[in-house]
Length: 328
Ligand code: PMV
Image (cartoon, rainbow, N blue to C red; front, side, top):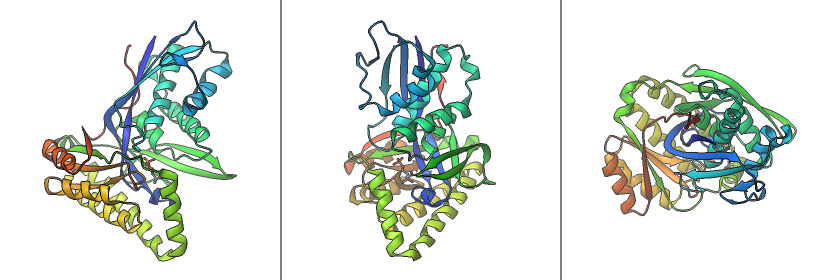
């Protein structure tokens, strides 16, 4: 039996702009997905039920790549998650990453020697396959590497370059440079409060909405570039441990995302409720539902304020550890 876990993620800066080549920064959160695999005598099982590929396309893609095509025997897989479901917190990426680690360990890779770039690559390819060819590597890289991850079309000076990921989407090759951002100890003074609106964030719908806006109002591309600049400033502030500047960058990012039409009343209400006790607050991910985040030194007060306006909350440090084997 192997137990592996991987963290969920929040996008700190750069959602939507990343679709147009700008950088984005994501943070691994303290809420994790845990995967237990063991040999099964009764065929393929997920949580004790027969494995349904349609219900678990990510898992299906992952198992084919790493196990079934190599003649692996049927497995019983159990999945537990601390994450809000369908909230844009990267749960499918965390499942892919944890399953990859568990499969490698069960075939003899020591827990301390998990090949993280390889896991992130396989998890990204599986996610893309399950999502009809479209997936940025930000979720899978963050849940694999942990900490804070910056993804961009080019190598960015603010962060430590780790590897290049590429993917053919609709016949066009897309390349991303994946970096990690070092966090100084002073950042541990602040927490992230995540507020969930209770409704899923419809990612492809919101991406299409921004595409329509940009084609009708090409001048809005300047806001996409501004988000890119705020993201770089935010990454620098993070690596310097300048919490005030991180908060200011988050607020600016939220204002720009509002201008792109991807926030909504619930997200704005939670952001406004969080602000008096926070260094900064913004929607995270696609918007139109899903979650917001607040950076705060008073997490309890901020969480209460968000709950008072109807949000469900979760508190996390900035930068949880990445994928790991739990039962070494
Ligand atoms: O809601 P999430 O975590 O899936 O984030 C979507 C981020 C976007 O920039 C809106 C889309 C993308 O593919 O990067």
